[in-house]
Image: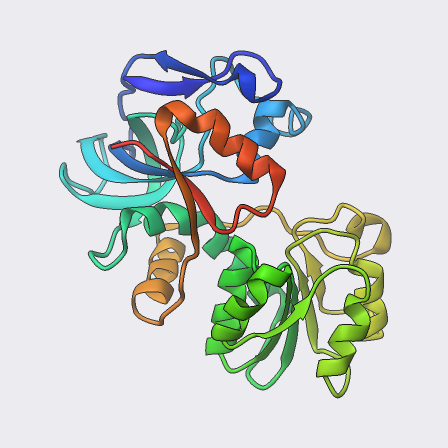
Length: 300
């Protein structure tokens, strides 16, 4: 099969389109004929070696966590059948024509292949963050980076749960955030004053999905470090603010995520879709930031 591999840490030039053996599913695993793979910042962080201390990978390595495809083979104990359409997390790398996975869920017919590959990481992270913050109907939540894939998902869920959501984003994203029911605020210098202009009192919780040094001013806004959470700013450890990076990957979470999209109107913003051979270009765009939507790789 064709797959994107790398055999040393480095820049995007280490990614190669390779011919590799088709993997065989083990106990509890299914093999997918991949339709679409999601592109995430962790993909290029692993490739660059930035994650090496905590996440060293064997070489050659196939990148890609998010996968959507059709079950092609079934390992012992896996409760799916050949031909099932599923999505979830790949265990062998999603930038490939075939991938192994254990944690997948049925893909609803109303969920497109691109959306199915776009939501596992963002949806799980967003739901986890909202749960850790303990947000409730009637409260006000500030989301830094509300136009990103995680922040946008979290904002829509929070609005649907009856919260007032203030979301920071770039100038090009403000109209989109407003259309989602979010109170949009331009990010960057002066954001704290702009937030104070649209709220009558302190916000109840802050979710930092951007990581641009906003935590100290967020503490000032809240008046306490309580109910502030980040997924993106390592300064949290020095400030005594929770940093969450890993959650529980389960079929139940995937089913809930799909339900938010197909039944409760959460909209996925799609960015550019790349062919498998241009995976390096996809990672370059991801690393550059502000892709304007979820980047994906169309495989099959």
